[in-house]
Image (cartoon, rainbow, N blue to C red; front, side, top):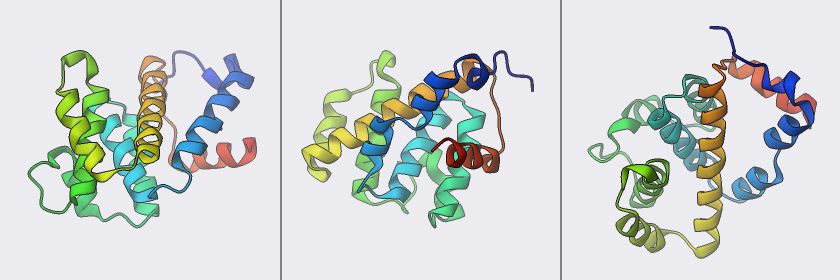
Length: 158
């Protein structure tokens, strides 16, 4: 697979800011890292982003997530291995990621607020927005990188 544009070469300062964006860092601070990776993985599955699916499945494993829960994520509604809190986050993820499809945002929000504080709701929503942005960059420009390369690039840019 050949990228259409090397976004990191074309706009290095902008991409460094986006990759290490304080918004994403703030959103994930003091938030459950396993749940964060499940949310990023689910949004990436919906958006068909192979790069981000690969990356966030790897990162979920690194956070201690089980293979079963990673594999069952597309069927989270039917799978018994997710908590009510995780289900609320996944429903909110799907509602925001599929916003243009007229997903039941009101119902998803009611479920969300039953399990997340107002601050957590904002952090989760920003996390969803950031991963949807990454999905659009990766799919739009045909990007694919090994998770180890991404991790190394993030560490060197920090």
